[in-house]
Amino acid sequence: MDFDLVLQGTVVLPDRILDEGYVAVRDGKIAEVGLGVPPAGRERHLLGKALILPGAIDAQVHSLSQKDQEDFLWSTRSAAAGGVTVIVDMPYDEGNLVCSAAAVKRKIDHAGPQARVDFALYGTVDPEEGPARIREMVEAGVAAFKFSTFGTDPKRFPRIPPALLDACFAAIAPTGLTAGVHNEDDEAVRTYMEQVKASGISDWRAHGLSRPPITELLAMHTIFETGAHTGCPAHVVHCSLGRGYDIARAYRRDGFAATVECCIHYLTLDEENDVKRLGGKAKINPPVRPRAEVETLWRKVAEGDVWLVSTDHVSWSENRKTNPDMLANASGVPGLEVMVPLFVKGATERGIPLTWAARLMAENPAKHFRLDHIKGALTPGKDADIVVLEPRESVYDASASGNNVVGWSPYNGIRLPWTVSATYLRGEKIAEGAKVLAEPGTGRFVRPLPRQVIAGAEA
Image (cartoon, rainbow, N blue to C red):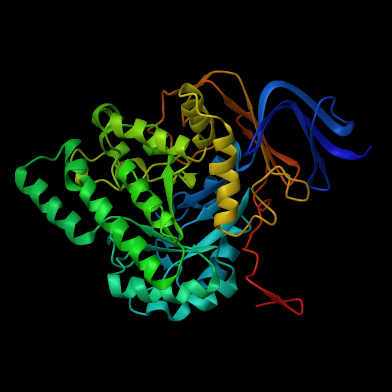
């Protein structure tokens, strides 16, 4: 038989949807995509109305933010269960800021034996060293760089002030990689935080009040203007406000590479219902905004102003998320297991074409991290990374599947009309329903295609 695996169903591509389409796989690669009667294969599944999408690439994962907590063993297990076949892991690891080639290699060696899905890595800089090690990290295989205009922690998650940000962008520009930045103006946030503390407000309202929209938007101008000045592609790694996507569009109109990522929590949760109900378990930086802003962001998706959708996944232990003093909680939530079905639910409820799912969670992330020579699309020759969703309603419960290191989730109790039924990595089934089949070590480190190749050697 010609093919190892054939799947027939509703094939979702970035530009069109094939009803009664099929995907055929040979030797771990996509071999054929077509319509009509599917060819024979060693393994053949006629899936009816099920959706067949490219495996998701989650552009923003924090596997090691809390020592002895999640690690790649668990983050990639959640990913496999959720139809995410590549995670791009952030460099802010507790006890090991990924800011040198040696640190990159340490992380690859650490993650490789644990990973159940493929992984790429972000690099960053130590503010005391500046951009000196950027080139060596590029050679070590990082897929992008991450900085922050706000200092969460002076060692693990430091602020990069404007002049240093400019120097780092200038060093990255010749490599063709992207500089991603956390967008909150440090001075403004600290001033508003002091005002909130002085007011005596410490409940769920405190977080949003301490980081009003202006704190995010001021930082976005800094980030995009730095990109414009240096010629470096500038990327905001999460934006909770429609206005932020308008700012990026204006820079693109003027000819600059300026992109914005939207996290799934900004498309799902709102302040007046979810933050009020969940408190610290919905504390995220930048904050979850009011419902009106959530709907604005879906309009930005439909208008093409969102470049990527990601999770910003981090599984803090419950004791770090349940302090009655809202500002004392750690920021961030887990989401790898549920991003894809949440996006599909949100899009279908609003009449937004599912082609955006293939674009924003697979094709664009692959381009963004220069992995599109092997990843991100159901295109012949690329890795057969596939997620299948069946039209079966489920109610999400993070503790029920056994695929998460923590049992809490801000998405617990949400009804999902589509459920991930299978995930394939390079043509091999790595999850079936809630059961993860991939053993640790199944995943591989993936690196960007080099900018240029000279006489067969990377340059």
